[in-house]
Image 1 (cartoon, rainbow, N blue to C red):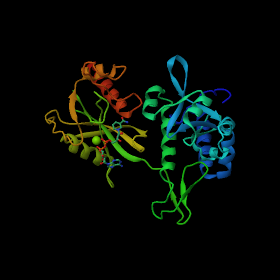
Image 2: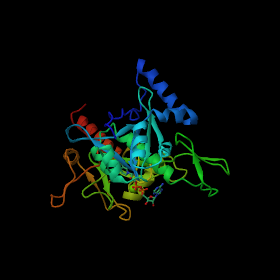
Image 3: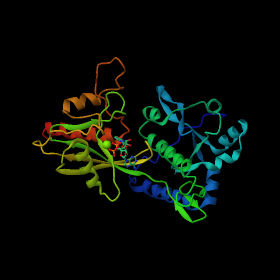
Length: 345
Ligand SMILES: NC(=O)c1ccc[n+]([C@@H]2O[C@H](COP(=O)([O-])OP(=O)(O)OC[C@H]3O[C@@H](n4cnc5c(N)ncnc54)[C@H](O)[C@@H]3O)[C@@H](O)[C@H]2O)c1
Ligand SMILES: [Mg+2]
């Protein structure tokens, strides 16, 4: 590829509508994205002058940026078409791009999986590397993670929903990739996320963290569980805490939410909950959790200061989820609240 393009402007991480003058820009951007989802020819036209993020078998392409950091690589659609030609591939692959958003200048942003092409050849052309998504999470900034996660989740949804689950017939995507239609039954399929409640339980002085055997060595996180059909957030939260550690919670407050692409697009609803200091005895379900225990403010404060996970041979230390994960946010919120409580604020 001729030259590296400037990094994509990350906009989708902004969940709040910006104030005043920029508010109207936000509204027009959201309406434009919605139009692109509804209007195939408008979307096809936008694709021709869009920015495109590349993936190879669901791993995003990253390019080195300043001071040892990395950024998701984005290219103009004409550069991608030229690369496809140079690598002897049909330009039509471009139309398999999926819409992920639009820049402040109303320039559409797409993702494309070039998994049919030779990985090394694309990396060479693009002066970057395809990096597995979990690893990418440690290399990208908090602002870049959501759009890469969204792109990967949409690409995976298309790859695994090529046939209608009701009729077994092929499904056909719209140009934006926001839906797939089964033409034989007329059923419209939309990308799905599984709702998960993640909760940081506190007894007023300590917080409760657990670890699954699949977690990286030393890592503990807030308790989490998928919502069962028909449950409210509160019901899932109470059930998961009861199932996993044998406690009944007294009060619940909502914190924030996050799309989490692992393993197959969860919609994480983050909450805090409290238990009475008189009822903190844990009865851990070891089929679900390898361990769960209470952590003091001092333990949490020092664990949050760890810059990298413990390596083999290091003294056993507690490692918390990466800063882009909502589990990290819940733990940080709890720590800040405890610290301001100790200062009497
Ligand atoms: N972002 C974060 O900070 C963070 C932290 C912890 C967990 N998580 C995510 O939360 C998710 C749920 O946590 P958990 O594993 O403890 O859940 P869990 O306690 O509900 O246990 C998982 C089990 O639930 C069952 N299950 C029910 N519905 C399911 C569905 N829709 N998809 C998959 N399995 C389903 C399966 O048997 C699975 O093995 C995990 O996928 C994990 O990646 C994210
Ligand atoms: Mg769980």
